[in-house]
Length: 222
Image 1 (cartoon, rainbow, N blue to C red):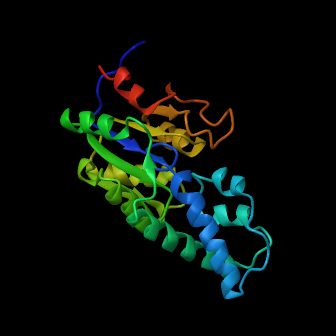
Image 2: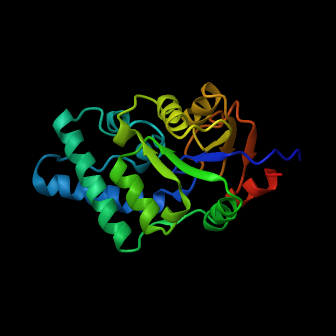
């Protein structure tokens, strides 16, 4: 294994990288569709969970297009609101988990002086609730989300983060092709996370390193 010099900063995707998304998403997803039916705005069966799990990493509007392709935009927007509501309530009730080794690894990097950031295509409220309620908020320099900055791609979000904080040396850590693209197009070393299994077998093509558990990240740091 060729270790790499520890960078100035590390940028992390959230879902499927730090956070075991399905531990919160699936109960909130089912609750959201139960409420849609009770409100009378949706009458069908709850779409298969695989649709939303396979869409993680995409922008929200594209996720709902895949999950509910026949639904009106108003129904998709209501589903979006309800999903965030139920996720927030459930997070505050203690539902949801980080991947093994995340807390310890982030703490070790933080103690080495590495600036830690989240770069997510999710909503601002969701990202902040997850990070805060799972006890890792104090480790991050800042949290960046497409929902907050209204960026059209993760490439743009990462570029904004790097420019705002004057970062010249960083690693992009994530589990989806959008993370690989964001790292490559911004000149970052890319660490691919292959333990969530939300994406396709080719999802991480182009990554400089592959992790099969989060704690392996420290093995690559000199």
